[in-house]
Structure formats: structure tokens, C-alpha cells
Image 1: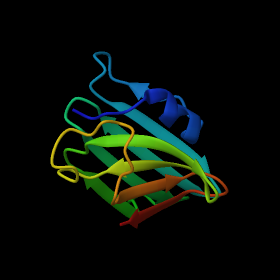
Image 2: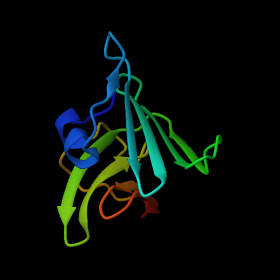
Image 3: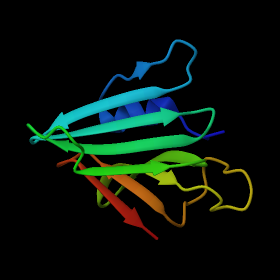
Image 4: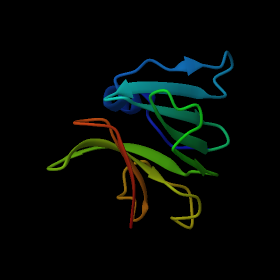
Length: 119
């Protein structure tokens, strides 16, 4: 199960999700500078889908799935505000929601949409 605070994701993405009636998934969509970010979080399975689309392009220009993601947290530092996603098995045990994530995926929305791998 994914450790996350939905408010953190709402704060960073500045978007209200489409939530499946039983809370199985949260689908976020953010449009900015001719780029669309589609983020789908399956909170019970810990699966996360990240896709980037360009205007007038039907297929994603970037697509990534994190299977069994252990956690998501909001970071605000000198580089700005962003979301940090932990890949599966990165902690050896359950993620506590507070610890620094040593490698994973960052999603920035300001000043423009960007997805980066770090570690």
C-alpha cells in the first residue's frame, strides 16, 4: 500500500482528481505550456502511471509506470516545490512517509511541467 497524503499531491499539482467511487484510483490531469501531465495513483496497489502528452499528439511522448510504489511526498526546497515518488523495494521495509527517498521520480509543475529520475 502506498504511503501518501492526497493534500500534498493536490497542493503541488493544483488539480482536483477524478476519483474512482471506491477510492481505488486518483487520476490527475495538468495542462501547462502545451504539455499535459496525466498522473494516475492506485493507492491500494501502490501503482503509479505517469504520462506526458504534447498538444495535438495522440500518443504520449513519455510514459512510465511505477509498480508497487512505496510512497509519495511533497518537497519544497531551493529548486522549488515538487512531488517525490519512491520506487518499489527501495527501503527494504514499509516507507514511513517522512524519510528522504534515495532514488525515484520527481514531478515539477512550476515553472513548467517536468518529470525526472534521480538517485
